[in-house]
Image (cartoon, rainbow, N blue to C red; front, side, top):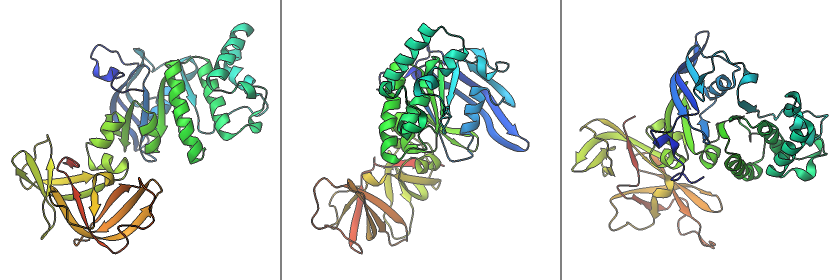
Amino acid sequence: MTQCAFAPWNDPEEKPLIQFRNVSKRFGDFTAIDDLTQDIFEKEFFALLGPSGCGKTTMMRMLAGFDAPTEGQILIAGQDMARVPPNKRAVNMMFQSYALFPHLTVWDNIAFGLKREGKDSETINARVDEMLRLTRLAKFAKRKPHQISGGQRQRVALARSLAKAPKLLLLDEPLGALDKKLRQDTQFELMDIQEKTGTTFVIVTHDQEEAMTVASRVAVMDEGRIVQVATPDQIYEAPNSVYVADFIGDVNIISGRAKTQGDKVAVLWAEAQPDILGTTSKSFSDGQEIHFAIRPEKVGISPDEPADAQNKIQGKVLDIAYLGNISTYHVELPTGHIIKAQTANTRRIARRQITWEDPVWLSWTDTAGVLLER
């Protein structure tokens, strides 16, 4: 999905499909969702991302109608859902376990909801055939769930969920049971199907890579609140807090005190170490606590001192993780800090240029990292 072309959240004329308005959900003394306000737009692939217990599944269950908010309103297409039972909502939910009927064929599993609605056989046949084509399952139509693979079962559950043409499809950790390679392939299939059907998808996941791959926007959650909502590239390149920076991808974080230097900000972080220079549109006052976050792939590593780097620090290689396409170097600084630097393995290596215990220089530009207040 091209984010530049598809950005209804930036259009003041666009009406949201889903509106959470000051929604709280409490279970006894425990607050699962804390005064949450959020809009989700039609045709979005919206990801709720966060660790276990952050409230993302509670949000989804309230959308589906399984739980009612303690306070606040949830609107779908402008209608308050407070008194609308789950089976009367234009919403379908796909569970991690897929919940297929083992005694029914793939075809009958997909047709199940349509039959319950009392649709005529011509409509059912046409719709099921369409879903089989969409999910590339036509040749498995007569098989039972135990006769197909995990990835295919996942597609059957998806086809069954989409058969009733819901306005909104909720996916709760839908790819959790698949192995890594299959999960990656299925992510692209999901995006493809979502784009073809135009259904709004809301996915709950704790897998940041999954959220970053499939979503038009990602909402990072912590303790019942949404801490940042943005497109995947914005979440990665411009996190609004140490929590978000740390939750998404690999990151180095150095904390210190701010010192303004013209249009730049210096981070005073250790005695006898050069200040870290960064560029930011935020204003920091001198002496204020500041956190510098930089991704490992933006840190250069070399055995020789770089001549004209804006930031450079000397250290010693402590560890090397070789991941095939990239190598990650864990470099210990004289202060005890460990900084990760990453290089792409573009050529086949016969011998490493940098190895364990080597003294090295780390360097980066003043725009490579993000300066954060919290």
